[in-house]
Length: 90
Image (cartoon, rainbow, N blue to C red; front, side, top):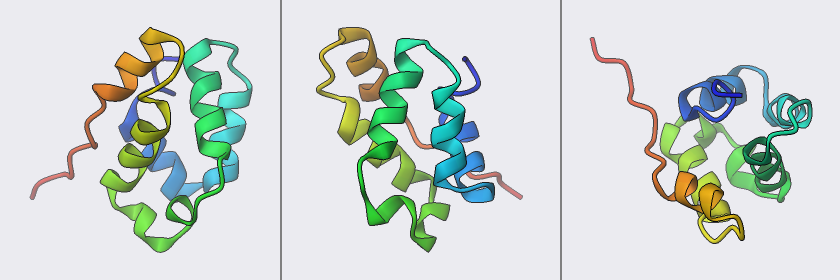
């Protein structure tokens, strides 16, 4: 579960395997965070299936924007605190 809610892992999974596989990964975990992420990712958006998805901030803004107002305060707080993964230097 901890790996699934890390944006760096989600970004890697999205760019290497695609959105359907990332959604599928969330389906196999019953934790409320994973289910909220799955529902957020299932909302249609060209941003998550376009080439610009390679930019870490795209995934962050999509997940944050969709979960900030979540009814479960823990999920909303998690989404609000999200930061895009750092790009490797060098």
